[in-house]
Image (cartoon, rainbow, N blue to C red; front, top):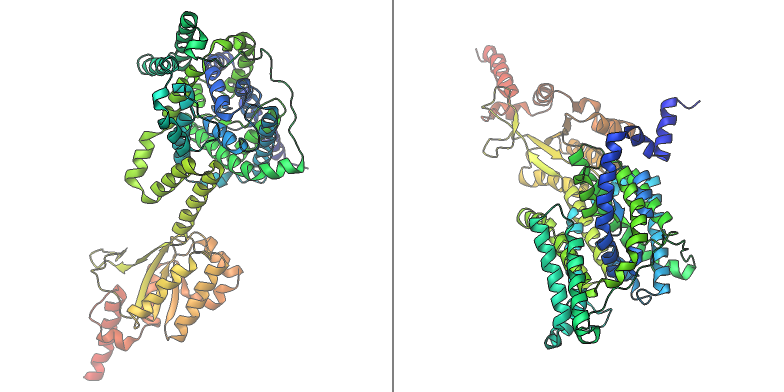
Length: 601
């Protein structure tokens, strides 16, 4: 029979909301409800803005914040993460699909829904096979660089709506700027005025009235200004166009396209979108968990995000992931459980039925102003500054991803950043730190130190390796061992301090065994001190310990040095040595002199 504890654990994995459901009471439900109302109001302008970025009809940005938010809240692991449309996912979607179909067309929407399904399926599979730890190997600098690059692209893509100039769709970053500066004398003052007024009002409200939803206020100000200008001069004179009315309906049922050709076209895009979406969601979840004291299950988060996209693709949703700002607002608004994110999706459905018709008054210029605000808020200047001043490698990763986002295809820019971060990580792990260790004569216990000014034993080299000894690190460690022969050929004995070695694979074990054999052929020996049980077990089970020798593995420093000095070093050389590196040297020399005294007499 299956133990009750294991059965409960399996049940919680299948229905993770059962973990937090007992926390619900009158107080938590009230707090979650208030946070949900705040979140639903905030996502109204954001959803339309994100859909515009994604090249989708405006209502699809709101659809993506409904069903996916509910599913992710119920089946994820974070208590505060809010899923839905985001800037990064939207801009990846547009850059990837605009070359395959006309934005906002039925074919384009079908491709977006199919991509959403594929991304969700990949996410779920990764969660089920326990690959949640993979995002740990993706540097946060990739996300920072991509987000900053995406912010610049968002602003550049909205130049046409912000200044009222004609710029063809589908142009690259530099082409948009070239086209804009070529017709800068044709700016529409009415459109530009509405956009600037929207932008300025949003900045002022955000700075001086933090509790007021600045995007909604900015949108209302821009809409009011457009209404006044159009009523006075006429839309034909002002050129101020509007978003158009949204359908006052719940998310309609939809179906992805499972044809082989479509799946083949979307496969490369899906991989990049999956990596970005998961990295974004898990990093947000972990940052909020650190503040709330919660522990995040990366695998469960993969499953929750994947299920939200799979289900969402059948409810007119495009790729959804964790949202930076809505998750932060959800936490700051006092959300206690994931019920807040789920209720926000439900409340948004009700708001959609009420406010959708009024979108016909929302000018594109005001949306451009709001998107400028979104773009500016995406750039994390504080963390970027920290990276620029503290880490050259992370700066390279961030800069490469940033410029790749501007000048390359977005999915390639993401993959480039991810691959570069992995290469740098592998380079670090393949070069474990290696120290020369020497007993400190000023310490009563002769503790090992790395002070290069202290004398070394002429016959025994002591070396410490900090890091895993796997196939990628073997050449680096082997080179360090061979350097001992080149620099100090008289040091035929080598003692390796294994305290910092956490893992050894077959290649690493073979290196240790071959070094032991090589040292014996040189007339010396190879010894390991303070090796961890897991490492020692691997050496024993693999048969490598037979070559190294059980007698050459030591747990005690005193025992190791006494055995090596008294039993393996050349005593004639010890008698002539004046360095006295070890305590055992003095004791051995004293005994030698005492034994030699009667003979001399």
